[in-house]
Length: 141
Image (cartoon, rainbow, N blue to C red; front, side, top):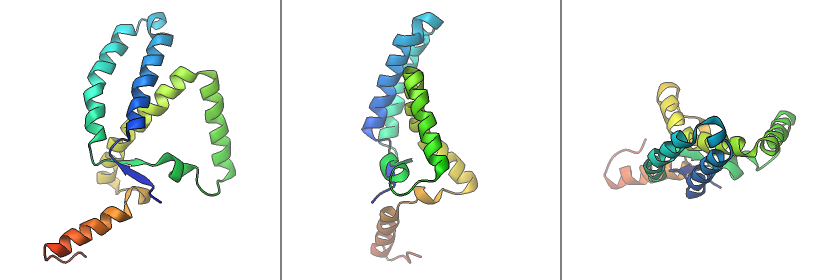
């Protein structure tokens, strides 16, 4: 069971686009942000494409956060997130999807400074690197 994706999953990229368009529809004209959000979406599309083909580690949400037993604090936070999504769905969904999309580069940046989180290390990728090193005649350790 994998806990990490390499590259932004396409549903995550689609969620960013759809949620920002919904955010623009709900708040854009009222707050005077319509043109700014249009340009943000236009500039963000190539960036989303690059994130999709990148090697950044993105957490597999279902396997990482919803599998296994959860602490009472995690359940309370999940219920709080559900309440926020119900009360302000457009803003909450945009924040969730955009946050997910930028989590890969942010984790990579913090990983170089402080070390990668334990879940961001993909066991299959480590095995592939060991196999590649062995094929090249190098010591995999």
